[in-house]
Amino acid sequence: MKKAIIILIALIVIIQFVPVDRSNPASDPADEINVASEVKDILKRSCFDCHSNLTVWPWYSYVAPVSWLVADDVEEAREHINFSEWNKLSAEKQGKAKEEIWEQIDEGNMPLPKYVKMHEGTELTGADKEIIRKWCLGDANKIKTDESSHHHKD
Image (tube, rainbow, N blue to C red; front, side, top):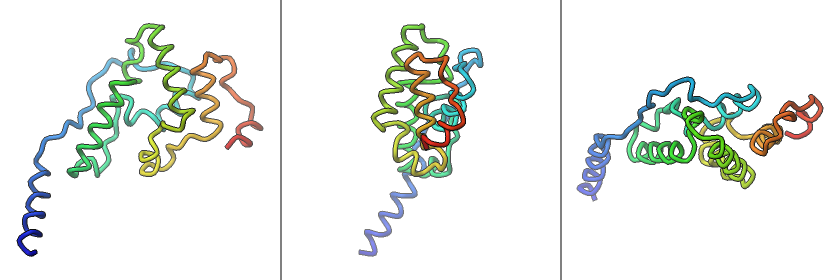
């Protein structure tokens, strides 16, 4: 039993040396998404950590094996949608991306429930979802909501 514990501890120490890419690739600010501030504020708060080149890497992203999972999640998220490279997409691809964004939010898949649990303040409120829905579905003139609807949709 003692030998098994020593081996386990040794393995935990050894896996800390497995390299993990936690980089934030350089990107041109001109390529970053340029949308109404109401939309961008929500995206920054709830989406940018995984879906941009501006990831804030939390302390646990430096501890294996969790670091492998976090880095993999960010890499996969950036492959799907990267708001730091949004303007590199054609208008058609942006439109399709918006459809995908809304579908994922509407189905409760995004932001990832495990991400929301670990990051206070990232959960989307009803008002947040309505703003994103209007942006994604092309209702840009109706993004701003009146104060009464903000208070009753949360």
